[in-house]
Image (cartoon, rainbow, N blue to C red; front, side, top):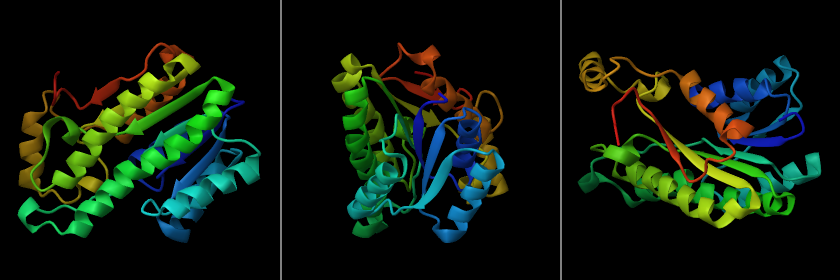
Length: 247
């Protein structure tokens, strides 16, 4: 991977930050697109500098098509090439029961969690086809498999990511480009802070392994899907959920 260029979206905390630390060990060039403002951008740049990684953190708005275009133009101008690996990790939630869900809550989640993946994948795939090599890894969610009350928007977007990944995988497989996704279960990150102790207990009772996952569990899977060891895998979805869903 030392000669590759990787684009990662969302890395200021949780799963994204664990992935970033893993990427920095590959010696590849790393671009991180963050929507967490200048504070998040600075924190990510510090991680890159700490690992002495050739990389850059760029501000990005997942809800804006213009921002996607600007992001990729900056990547091309800075590195004189397009990414060899695209990791679509960034995502947002706007939880609400369907009967109370506002159109903006639906649209924002679909835009950030699904439409952004379309725009970035479309742009990066063009370069990968010319090079006849590429890796696209999309982070979905266990709710794409089982749904979740109050998250119709999030579940729809994440299920869309799975279908999108399989469809794109079929289109580009002959060009030595793999497209896979990961469906994390309940991972110990800030996104679970909404649960109280009783809710957490109920969740753990449903997980056969009896514990939450860690962000590093997902980062290890990303590392595998980038590597030559996964070269014959495409259109797949890795379910990393402690046995919560067994298909």
